[in-house]
Image (cartoon, rainbow, N blue to C red):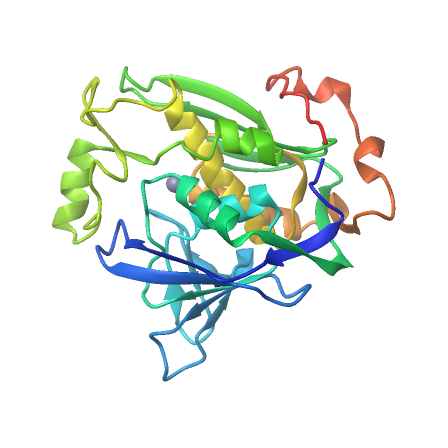
Length: 315
Ligand SMILES: [Zn+2]
């Protein structure tokens, strides 16, 4: 189910430029090759007075209110990392240095499609080291009010979400994605972020959403979509929440072998479920791919009765 048992980095550097949705600042970002087992690291090239490397790991997350923000111990941050990391997770990029000359990853069109295209342009190179994966051994959950996130054992990587808005245009949407590179490119990569017009106006007053526009988000006003081109998928909203979850969960530091399920969950819940998981050593293990066939051992056909059968996962 995972693309390869070898680790991968980019074959050559690739540069992306665009505006940050919250800061309104234009950033230039270069994804560069990195050694095996080094993981994903952001480097703030505009910060020169302190150590400027920020590991893309769950325990460096410092803010999840509007997007996922990572901060190193010297107070150097990078914001809105989730869509980029989602593309990395789906395409199987294990190791990279992401140089960025500002505080926020460009929003591009609000989806992950530009990052997927950039990785396609760079190409991926296999490295002479086996991949590690995070295998969920028993179900854990984190609950807060009517929100809940689960991580359960599964024979592949599955991401399910349920969202519920009073707004009739969005309403209730539920979707489970059986993740392969192919299915991600087809079903998830192009799903854009979204916001409500009244919230966008409020955020602007607070000095946020400065870079937000109809070019990088679906904007909902009552039961209407303001974007003239309409939606890319009928349920684009829940698909985008899955895109976010894939990026947030990749902060575990390894690809997931398990089933993520979120109920009204966003960036905060995604990070808290990782904290919950890593506090329970008997609930997970890191395995080295190519040495066993662990995905078979944990096949549990009954597990999807309640949350919906995912698509078949192949290759
Ligand atoms: Zn998002």
